[in-house]
Length: 471
Image 1 (cartoon, rainbow, N blue to C red):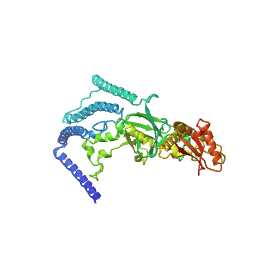
Image 2 (cartoon, rainbow, N blue to C red):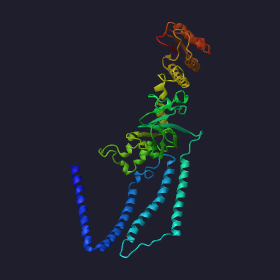
Image 3 (tube, rainbow, N blue to C red):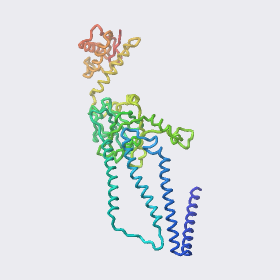
Image 4 (cartoon, rainbow, N blue to C red):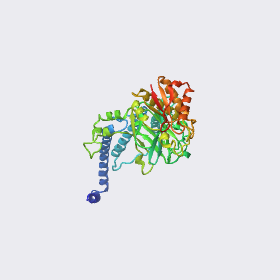
């Protein structure tokens, strides 16, 4: 029904316009062609003046009315350290181009009024004017020089890379149809190397897991991702298929992701998501319902999120490139990051395709030492001294000979016993060679300075090697 009404309205308007045209033709015949032209020119000139006044007033009014919704104004100040530089360049450019815009619009419509057609009036032909051409060339050249020099200085400042001695964090953003994969460095602070030839269904980034730097990397294929406030961030930007664009509009960060040509951007967030929301809350535009269909629901400031978008039309699923970015204080970021698992540990280690199968990695040795120390301490300090399992102690086949990798766990035990000199342990082992295995472990410990009076063999255990602690 609505479509039918719209169609009828269009037909009615068309008929009215046709009739107006016919009336105009009759008026021209009655008045005469010259009189009609004079009246038309007079009204065109007056309407041109009225139009330019309404137009310029509307431009100024709309800019003022929407100022709190435009980046760089109202609450939408830059959320990054370098953003103010770009906003200032934009304001300077807008100032000069705004002057030209206003003057040319006034001149255009004023001339339409002033030089309207009149009987006997002819145009004057001026083929050359040195002064006009000099001003017309010199002024734009000067303005362009100011803008170019300012823009070049801003570019050099904003695009400066980090130096090795700076305190910064590097992350990697890989774009593909249709999503971003974010990779963080692990505790070593370094992102591992990658090689597209290593790309598989499991390892879609082509990470080289023979590189120790990659073992603790964290990979987030989707969902929210976090960055700390007041920390310089270097983003390594890569594309897997077509041209994408890494765009964080609130931070004035925008850089193409080009297949085969890694790019980067460096920025420092200066405000948290929570603080930015608090700033938005002060403005009436952001106290409106986020969903107009639900007037009692959350307001716009409550639903605000920093977002990572793709600023290239990369395909039909372009919209799904959006990801939410949370800016949080450093301590909150540390808590969040500590809860993330290494991609290598969770998805690759010990599985088919693991290039380090059968090896104990340096990172694992360090992690095991920390975990064992904490477990041993907790057992010693418990009300009733507990039992500790030596999960990483193994033997060759059914013998009592220690496997080569068992030394790491036993060295951790040596450290723990030296830390708690008043503690004694009973060593239990499993299997047909249980007694011999327990004796082998005890010998390993005594050979490294642990007193024999603190060690004894316990009853056979059901599995593996375990310790019964006594104080």
